[in-house]
Image (tube, rainbow, N blue to C red; front, top):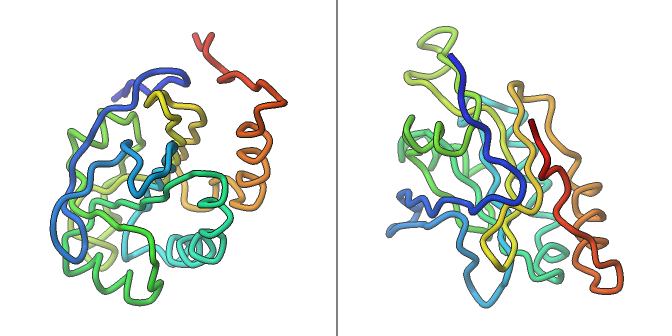
Length: 178
């Protein structure tokens, strides 16, 4: 089965999911006065690599915010599983849950079935990162089909620091995808 990957430079779809702690979270729309947003899609509670990645993201959050980048994380987990995992991370960024198959496909994410009921009880999204600029365009995208193949957050932060510097006049790259 093929899926359409979210192209660099395209408009990021406004996707609403339930937010841990109550309410809704619209991913792709910066909040709290930030003009960019980084959407981190993680696999779910069954993934210890995700827990470590989300913890590292929390330690770097002030640096992302200093660049004007809002940060959110989202998974397909139901509320109870998301709550359990996020209790280990204790992030100050918003976390959404219940990402649907249609939403995963709209983002062009790789989707996997669980290996067993011990892993999880539903299809889940493999990792993805989308950095959405002030015009709601996908400035940076990284979509993976494995938990161990995702961008190093410090390297990503350095790249965003370069992109956000007006002196560099850095365009969206990769817009001539086949």
